[in-house]
Structure formats: C-alpha cells, structure tokens
Length: 72
Image (tube, rainbow, N blue to C red; front, side, top):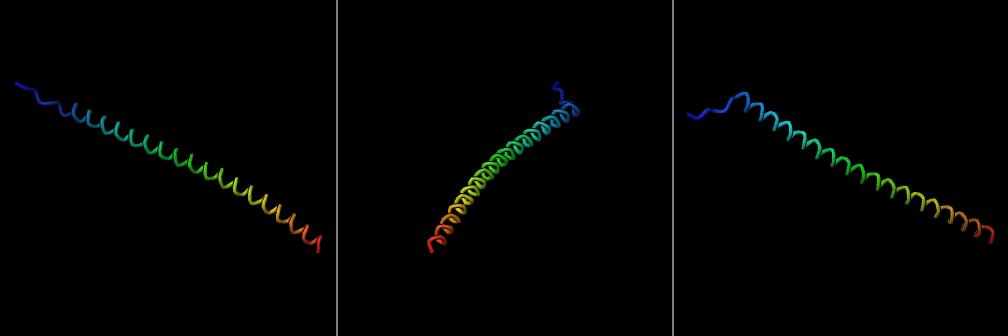
C-alpha cells in the first residue's frame, strides 16, 4: 500500500521552494540595481568631463574676447 505524502512535509517543501524563488528574485533585482548604479556613475563621469570641456572653451573664448578688445 502506497503512502500519501505528508501534508506538513509537502507544505514545508513548497514554502522552502517559494523562499528560494523569492531570494533568487531579490538577488536578480539587486544585480539590476547595481548595474543601473554603475551606468549612472558612468553618465555622471561623462557629464563632469563635458562640464570641464565647456569651462575650458569658456576660458578660451574670454581670452579671444580680451584679444579682440585689445585690438580695437
């Protein structure tokens, strides 16, 4: 005669499986957030480089403006 599975054992196994799936999903979300954080830091670095280039251009333009005013 075959024994039917114990309800509490089945419930416990299903609960453990659900916890493992939930844990995996949380780790996947955590990984995605770390990727987004890295991408944002790269964008921030690029924006600071652009800001630096614009300040250099501004400095050069003020030098040109000064030279033009000296000529006239």
